[in-house]
Image 1 (cartoon, one colour):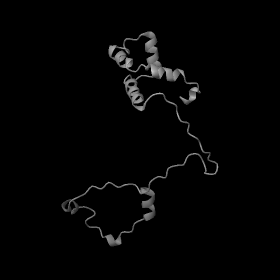
Image 2: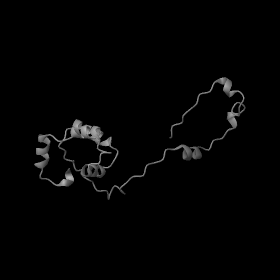
Image 3: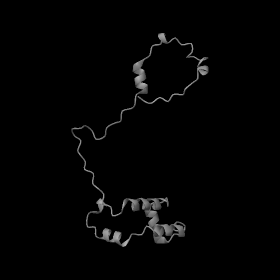
Image 4: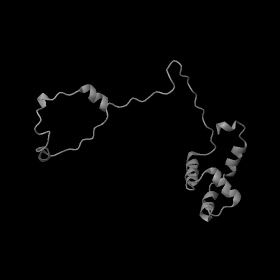
Length: 130
């Protein structure tokens, strides 16, 4: 069932309304309709039936960065609010509107260390795994 969010009323608030004069013994509820109206919607299963469903093996991505460094890089790059292609074009064209002194200072901190460069250049596997 869907959750119902109640608003509590005081006795004084309930004296002069439709519910105060209602005889509960004569009320007949349509429980089928209540179930239809208030039931949670069932989520549709993806992938068809269980018999034809193939088990997909999730490939593990290869990363050369520690999780903290990766998170910091994502935060700095996210501050630009432009695509990576636009950021690369700003470097190629020396766009001072995008690459001001503060932006260049923060990007300088993202430059890979010699250890990270050696790890990336030594990678011989497929690019899809990166």
